[in-house]
Length: 130
Image (tube, rainbow, N blue to C red; front, top):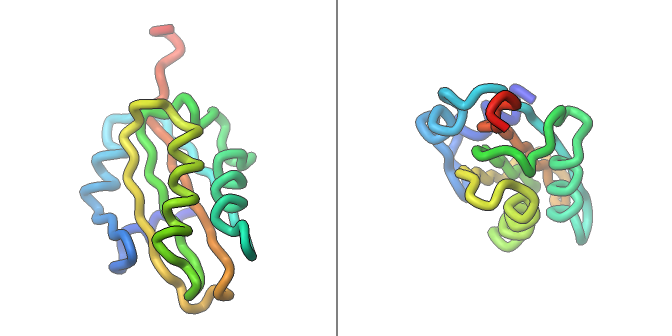
């Protein structure tokens, strides 16, 4: 959890996110919830993304979030195509006009075919205004 957030901003990657990007998503956005998913093999990106958005850690559906921070970490086989596959699944399952920040990094300690997706969702509509 916390490691996923720290990984987003601590080192450059395929797609880098700085702390101001993350602050822009989180600041003044109310409740935040997080999901984490991991995939291996040919469908690693898709499996990790689906696991992240269906994670039991998410107590509110990501489809209702207006702000998303997405971090994708993979082994040495991680490509921008795999990052795009995971990001498309996340984008297809969140609020249509959501503000989404994406970070992606290679972790050489991961097995080459492993991908972990961390989703931080926030900006949920308050129930009183519905």
